[in-house]
Image (cartoon, rainbow, N blue to C red):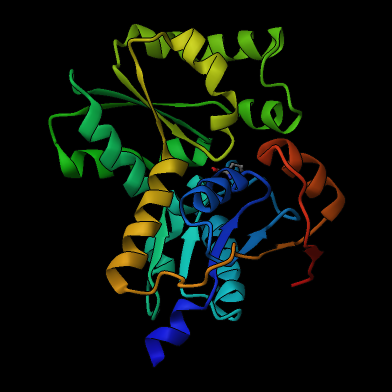
Length: 270
Ligand code: DGL
């Protein structure tokens, strides 16, 4: 009885803003029948340049809000939040709370052949060395090289996913990584899957790109199946988006990220 009630509950997902829609998109592809509540903390983005103390505070507030919505699982779509605050969020909870680091790290350690993995992300993510810890926790022989790429976030939000400025920016960040002879590169930020085409062009075909958003969606599916709380509905799930500021911009940029119309967006105040 309790389980049936749980199956019907939505999945909760939060990000510092619009970027988590890359995770949302993968979730809807893999689990089309699930209802989803998304929270984008657009009033306080970016998280990637903030201190761990502030990132933890914001992430705890986002978690509290989503837990109050009666969700059955919480997905921390933001790589920065996941890297810095996940253990804090996981304390004293009754539902599964997962981030994007472990799933991405697992995949990277599976696919690397030469045991040299690159990780790109925000400054806070790279500084936290969370991917490095997770990857080396699986295989201590793997060498991990981190590189923060802060300009990728505004480029993706501007929709500049394939132009000269983007190409030059990607080159400046990634050529030094290429010289380190990595064979696997983790896209450790919500926005980077949008730049995958240019990243692939610059880093070369010999490097396997790991999309943490895709891996996380697979992990959510595994957890729902394992706990036997996958939605049994026969129609597509419904979606609700909450933002903490500027719903208009969230919709505009979100539609670039999703490649389709974005409805059901509501602005909230803490
Ligand atoms: N969502 C963030 C991440 O994945 C990128 C944007 C930000 O800095 O807040 O790390």
